Figure 1 (spheres, rainbow, N blue to C red):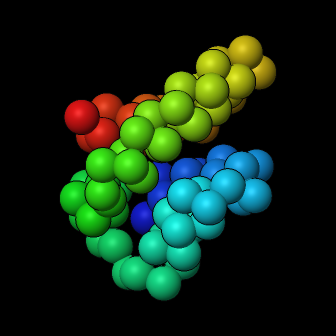
Figure 2 (cartoon, rainbow, N blue to C red):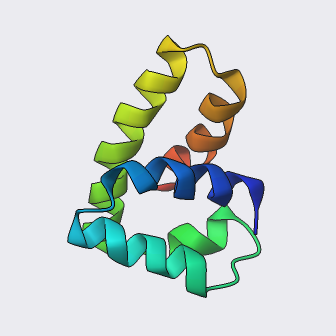
Length: 82
């Protein structure tokens, strides 16, 4: 699995009670995406909107705790959403 998707999966685990999040996590776990571009191309509009919200929160958190690697990896997905 792509490192970026590993970071994304880890971040989404914090939101796993949400049905849309569960669906996204299932996609990550069951599909063999070569990279984050393939993953984003496989998302529907609802999933993209959900990730937009979650990633904004997660990026703010990562910046606050000065986790540069996490910021970089999550930003890669965030920039592909729209």
